[in-house]
Length: 129
Image (cartoon, rainbow, N blue to C red; front, side):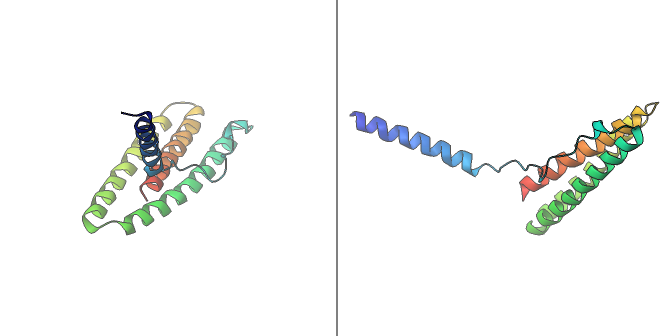
């Protein structure tokens, strides 16, 4: 085999890698950097900051869910609806666990939990679109 054949094989491998990487869905990133709520002076301010950020991500999650839902055939819509309902139950139960601690830190941890899970789910659904 000539060295030209090896070059062609190498080019095919490189092109295959490019195609695989190109075909992978890009990970959704926040439209704007999130504010660092830890810079706030009081627990109430931190909790309010986390709630504001969670509301932004919850709207983004709702829009991604609806867009994905509308794009699916009926049988997959049912699965997405069921998965979303179960995810909401999990989120609420998981964050209620953090909220059940004693002290003011529980409010912050519960807020962080809601923000973290809502952000992750919104990004996950955006990747599914």
